[in-house]
Image 1 (tube, one colour):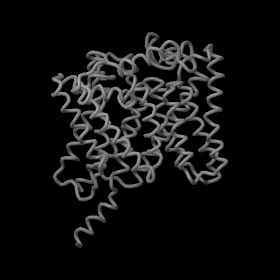
Image 2 (tube, one colour):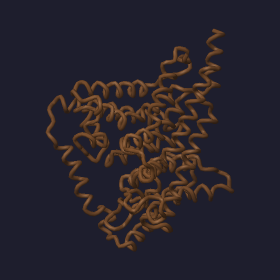
Image 3 (cartoon, one colour):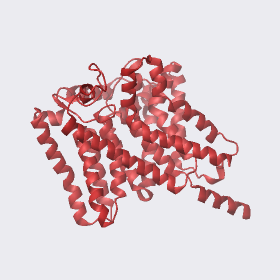
Image 4 (cartoon, one colour):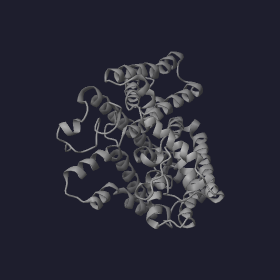
Length: 426
């Protein structure tokens, strides 16, 4: 019973994280703006789940009474453990400070911590489905919020309504714009974070849509709402991820009717056309819609610099150490590549890059039949990560995705009890 209580505790911790994390940036912005807490106190509130994760991880993974016999580890589980070990080794091989190494692990490996905690626990099928349904509901809430803020609330509504002070840079229209057109972001850190996160609930909802006549229109309505919010974020990488994911879905899905596939094929085109009309009406120019104005040049220049930068042979293969690139490097010497993959090459070298590709490829293949929604979500997010530090600077997405992956791969209590019974009989 002790183990079962531990797993229940783990489950509700993960559910709380899934439920709160999409709104956490807005909550922290409010606390920072309206409370008397200093930087370190706000940081402690912001990262409350990290010590809890560590404690539960120790209780579950290093529990001597853990049901090891009931869990079948796969190749990518071992690769994930090797990837984390390689990340830790890179700290000492490159003589980084412990502080920088910890920052690197927080940004670039914490999602694997959530994965392993969920993976090494045991949940019922009903609990796993509840977690997936929760993510879809949260995706609907954020999408509807994003559309309402664009159409009704307008720019700087957080400040105009007195929720945040006038000098706060958080919220729709406050900071993130394409020239003069604000990008939808709801309660997320920014529009790229919103767009990338919504890819996951979109493909879960698409693959789990109901066949009942009384729910078909409702399900399609919410799919259009989520896709519309992705488009209104004007995150080019998220929109590209959505298109690639849809192409994979249309090619490999054998259950959807032809007329549904036609509607699904034209939906992004219609939404894209409407977003262009909105963009032009807000004073934007068509070239800015595609290029994002002056930011486009700096974005591509950062990627170019990362590609052509001089590296020694050891740096090329082994990297300069976790935490030396991407968002984790902001507190040290900023080194931004505008790509998750270039960040991995910089930090962990070609060895780390190949480990990551193997992990993602094997997980995608493993899930493509048993849970195509998560597989398509991972594919679409991986596409977005070509042009963003998606897994590092979007904890809402990375935590949610890898918690669901870990839950799905864990063995349920029913199967665990059956395997123990067979063992005793033998």
